Length: 241
Ligand code: GLP
Image (spheres, rainbow, N blue to C red):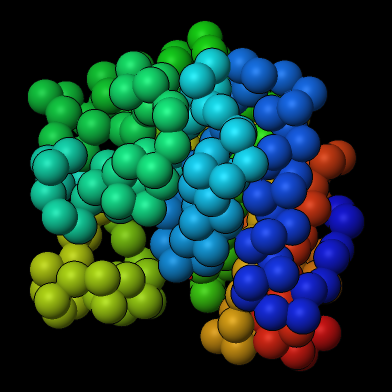
C-alpha cells in the first residue's frame, strides 16, 4: 500500500482528481468505481471542474457505484443515486446509460445482488476504484465481520454507521437499516484502488489500518491483500500514526 499524506482536504481532492484524469488520458473508456459520503465530494468537484475548465470528457467512461440504501427509491432525496446526480453526474458528460448503482428497491434483493455482480464482471474489471473509509473500518458498506470472499450482498448497517450517516438524514430513525453493497471480493477485483480519508474523525481508523493487521473486524484491512492500493490522507486523518 502506498501512503500519501496531503496538507488538507483540498490538496487531497486535487491529487485524487489528477489520478482520475491520468487514468482517462491512458484509456478513454475507463471503468471507474465510485463511492459516496463526504470524502469524495471534493474529488467530484475537481472532476466537474476538469470538464468545465480543462476539456476533460467522460463520454466513454462507465461508472460503478459501491452501494445503495435498501428501501430508498432512486429518486429519494437521500438515495445514493441522488447523491451521485447532485455531486457529480449532472456536472459531467457521462452518458446516463453508463452510470451504474445497485437498485435500492428491487423486486428481489438476491437477484439484484447477482445482477450487480454480473454487471461488474461484464463491464469490468474496474480500472480505478475510489473508496472512502468508515470510522469503524468499513469500505462500501462492508461492516466489521464481513468475510473477504463476499461479492455484492445485502447488509445490515452497524449502529455506528447509521449514526455517522444520520447527518445526511433528518434523524437516525430515517437512516435505512440495510443496504446493498459490493463485497470485499468485488472491490478487490479492481485493478487499482484509491482509498481516501480526511479529517480528525478518521485518524483512529487510519492508524488501525496502518497497523497492517488483516482482520474481518476491520474490513479496510483486506486492502493489504491487493497489490495496487494508494491511501490518500490529509494531515488530520494521519494525526495518530
Ligand atoms: C458511507 C459509504 C461509504 C463511505 C463512508 C464514509 O457509509 N457507504 O462508502 O466510505 O460512508 O463516509 P464519509 O466520507 O462521509 O466519512
